Amino acid sequence: MYTFIVRRLLLAVFVLFCLSIIVFFAVHMIPGDMVQVMLGPAATKEAIAALRKSFGLNQPLYVQYFLWILNLLQGNLGESLRMGAPVLDAIISRFPVTLELILLAMGLALLIAFPIGIICAVKHNSWFDHLLRPVSVIGLSVPDFWWAVILIIVISTYFPQFYIVEYMGFFDNFAVNLKAILPAAIALGITMSAVIIRFVRSSLIEVLQTDYITTARAKGLSETVTIGKHALRNTSTDVLTIIGLQMGALISGAVLVEVVFGLPGVGRLALDAVRQRDYPMVQGTVLFMASFFIFINLLVDILYGILDPRIRIS
Amino acid sequence: MPLLDVKNLSVNFNTLEGTVRAVQGVSFSLKKREIIGIVGESGCGKSVTVRSILRLIPMPPGEISEGRIMFNGENLLALDQKRLRGIRGSNISMIFQEPMTSLNPVFTIGNQISETFKVHQKMNKQRARKATINILEKVSIPSPEKRFEEYPHQLSGGMRQRVMIAIALACQPKLLIADEPTTALDMTVQAQILDLMLQLSDQFDTSILLITHDLGIVAQTASKVIVMYAGKIIETGSVSSIFKHPFHPYTIGLIKSLPRMGLRSQYGKKPLHEIPGIVPSMNENISGCWFAPRCDQSMDICRKVAPLQKYIDSDHSVSCWLFN
Ligand SMILES: Nc1ncnc2c1ncn2[C@@H]1O[C@H](COP(=O)(O)OP(=O)(O)OP(=O)(O)O)[C@@H](O)[C@H]1O
Ligand SMILES: [Mg+2]
Image: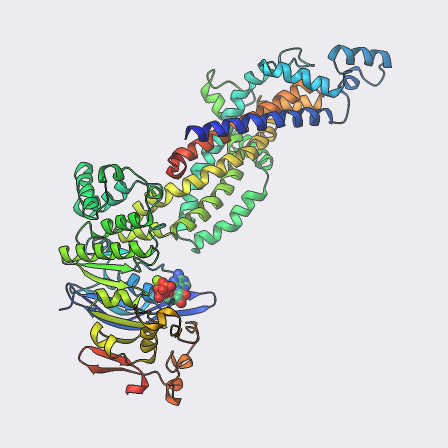
């Protein structure tokens, strides 16, 4: 188990390294030049060159990358070219919003998906199961930002008392915080739950056909124990993997939903940074969210190992 | 009164390709402490027949369209779920073919055996643990305390099948249904597992319904044989009678194809007998005898009318036009 974790950790470090290269060069390939944007179309060539030099943008790309990585290894993501403040500080102050949004969305998705997925699997080919197919296709094909817009319209029209203009932190004002984040989490969670329902359903149908389920029934166990204990335990390890993979969709969904709901999360920070060609900030936010994704998947792998004795004891 | 009396059992599977008539009007009965062997080619409905006894076939697509299964005077097919669960694993137990997949990979051996004690004998955790370790000893699993905490993947196939036997015999059932319990095991392990099963059943007064491909095993263990072909019983009788005087051409073929120690056929001078052709697919509609297409003695009537069961003597019957 320990070698398993160490292997995963080493792999994560390697992936992060590759990622840093991709992020850095991708960011510099965004068309448009920050200095040009800052100084406006009337700026002289000299002024542009001077500013580029002061930002270090005149050096060759690989030198810039090297300097960036060197700072990164010291925990320094550089300074925002726009805010003049450390990138890391900005991200850390915004991250709780995104984290809360993602966790809430995932929690809601699981809460919806498990009961429905279980019913569909246990009574598969029933009317409920058949009804769910088109519904889940809708859930899958409608993007989360569309749900976000719909939710905003519904809330502001029919439930104005829940409409929040000013976001407040989790510890500052829990009620306002929840009112602000919950609709966004619902918008994100709906799409996610559609994915997970299908997964729970197909995984459980497969598990219910295994020999050990027949053994459980032959022992005289009730359907509740057979499904609740013997089948679901195996299904949930399957679902765990999909949760890790879906984190990617959840993070990118969070960017859009944060923008639609005006939540001050890392997603919005990143989008603003792209608009302003704030290279260090874009690099910082993308790398941060990617690390978060890798971290979650690492956690999933470890949890998977804990849940599955075939990995834990081998 | 027999312990188990199956009357006219028919099981269908309603699939997209049509109705598969997996079992068609099967009847047999089993006395207390008796061991009956069921033999027949792959796909002839052996597993479906015995799984129907505990209603363990998937429904849908499966459907028990006809029949009665009396166990201790109760019709198992008419029981409600709760009553049926009370019988499963306590009065009637099953062992399956694949020891690799019939145990849940994510729970310990101990957990999976104690469940039976908890469910049927309402034991608490400590008592169930004691009983489990006790039964693990009975099935000759070394260091049972240690094995209790282990997971299926840490055990060999033979050991897992011992665990399955432990689960099945935990409550000293009246009937053990063993569906090819040794097919997936090494030759040397096969004999051990079979011995263990027989020895414990003897100790607990358990009757056995033993499915196997292996007529040799039947000859060694059972007192009665049921020969199935394409969902029907085509011949049944005592082991001695069937092995000495098989009547049905299919049974004769089966016995001929049995390799025998010390016979020339073992050394390749005379090849092992093989029954030509394959089992018909069971969604076909055949009006005559299902074996007729493969039978070298078939007559006109065989292809038109299904043969009836004919008693040769009190405990040997055959369904074949040659004897009607
Ligand atoms: N779930 C199912 N759906 C459709 N058909 C099935 C199902 N289970 C069994 N059958 C059909 O029922 C017939 C009998 O199968 P069964 O498993 O009883 O054969 P068997 O005699 O036990 O063979 P084997 O020796 O291979 O175990 C087969 O033709 C099979 O195709
Ligand atoms: Mg079978």
